[in-house]
Length: 424
Image (cartoon, rainbow, N blue to C red; front, side, top):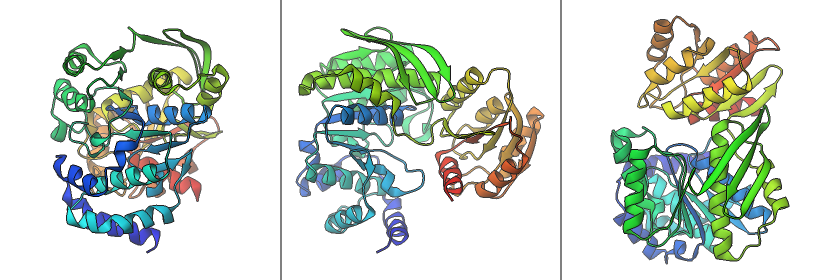
């Protein structure tokens, strides 16, 4: 079976089997021999930033000589992106072979697409005898397929309004779902979370005797310089004090994500007996491998892709743009999903836009061109419509002058399609 055949097969066969409950996944993993039971490492949830935290943890573990697996979602271009061992995507052949071995169990338990993806990751990571595994939550936390993994350290990055039909329409309800990853006695690191949802999480942690480490109380970060190629910041947690840390991740919010990852890693290092080396920490943070998040593709003209796909993410993206390129207006290539709060996302974008190139991405959940363009009309912003991301990108590039700035995003689907066009 070739790559596209495999992808079509698993999408068609398993995409309709979604059930937000853990019983089916628990039975499936039991029949597999519970491969997740022997894994050590991190479990990361949050509305935004969890992928950046996971990628930072991967860089830190690898810099300290730990064989490391990383399981994230969704993928931008290739399904293989969801599985990395020691910083490298797994070969498709390895994933396919594992799938074929487990397929009878997937069929028996009528598994969902995400459940089989998680099960494959657990199986391959277990068989690879990795020292550290980093598992990103897919959706929410409490009923997510990844939640049968018991980590050494858990993390919740941010709480924002996203996936409200599934997780609930308030920050408190969403916090309760994400707090479902907290395990008895397992340390929990929290990012910058508003007071009300934070209380929900802290109460759950207290019930389970899970020690909690809070941003702004237990660990601290402060941005000292912003550049096109990343940020410089200071960090402090207990005896760990670093001045002038530099990360290749771009954006003020990334200092918070990296600080959270550093804190989780230092706690983990203490548990695992890893000797932390300042030189290795500096090296790791300069070499984080995470595409599609404020990623600069070109500098003259500046072309950026960013995966911001909710209001909180768009605010962070715009804050970064204004800080790195003050007193500038931007061109945006945008395609947003209809189940997001796209009117508010576009209102914010319009306030900073010189021109918008609206596209229709490949997702069947994409907002129509008419839905998106209505927001530009309402806000008096010049715009162009194109029936595909590739076509919109072609039009936008032909318009660009050397000193222009083009920002592409609105959805991870859009980012993936722009990266595919750029690659080719």
